[in-house]
Amino acid sequence: MLHTFSFEKLRVWIDSKELVKIIYQVTRNFPSEEKFGLTNQLRRASISVASNLAEGTSRNTNKDKAHFTTIAFSSLMEVLNQIIIAKELNFIDDNNYQVIRSEIEKIANKLNALRRSQLNK
Image (cartoon, rainbow, N blue to C red; front, side, top):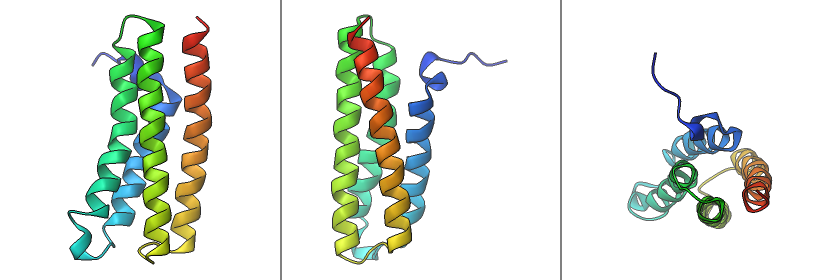
């Protein structure tokens, strides 16, 4: 059986990984000229949320862990900004926009709670 690393047990990491999948599905329908623009930016920013959570769990101090949680939150806000722009450019429909906004809000709340927990240890 494979070892499970601590970040794999974090509900917020699991949720952020699901957000990556949603972003990849939605951006498949973006115009082809956006392949190296908004499509790439959205995908990279969404992956950054999960990656920074994973990296943060490997740090030794709670302050350092909280720093990576903050970076994950910043990447999440980057995703939100880009989704708003994509919506205004009519690259995504209302339903996908609402689904993604809802996921972002859920993840943001969990990231804030995780950061508070890390700083209060």
